[in-house]
Image (cartoon, rainbow, N blue to C red; front, side):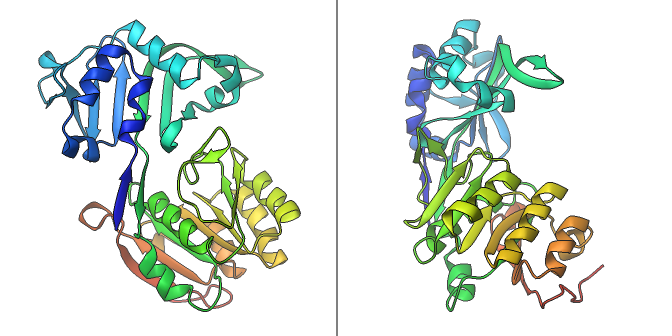
Length: 315
């Protein structure tokens, strides 16, 4: 497996002082960094494997906040304008959702004061915090499953795991593999699979994939089937009623589905009434369960689903 990190693609989004400190970080720490957090009046935070530490002006990472580089309002303003490509009004939809996808597939979460119109967040002002989530693609992490399950034809596959188990990372690599053989429509509601930036995918998603970026899942699924004639639909984090209703129509059209959902065990999965409905309709041929913690990203279990979704599992 090969881990591709996009740390070096984000340094230009920071103010000069913070940028210079980030550039000085050693290569191992750069590789291990998952998030960079800016909060006005507080230290620059570097997050690695869930642990928050602090950045010094020399590029060292420390547990002592008194040694850290402190974020000021100008730092936030500089980064926010850069993230918005110096045209804030062009990103009104993204701002209403609370994040913007930037170069390299990195995603920037935005904290501030909501401007609410008609009971919905219209935009955000007075930005007080930014969270740069470092995008990574683990090339090869899905190859064993691909070689095991996709040798004869495309299949429907549900990828389940607890939060932080690597479901999206696994899904990205599976996209890369299946889209070499079959026509794939990726419904990328949150921009995490293809990581579109200015119309171009930042991740390797195969040659035969079409991306519906930012579409609500239900609308994206229906549009893809209508206009792209896919052999596979791929989407992340299904589970609510509207997702399932759209996927039911996908099953009826004969298109296979690859999707993820939150569930750490088969028993937990079958307690989700909308997921259970999809299983009973034959939407998926297999379920895989991913591990977490020391088993992060590992396939703990593979379960074939007979038509009707009726099988024994540990309650």
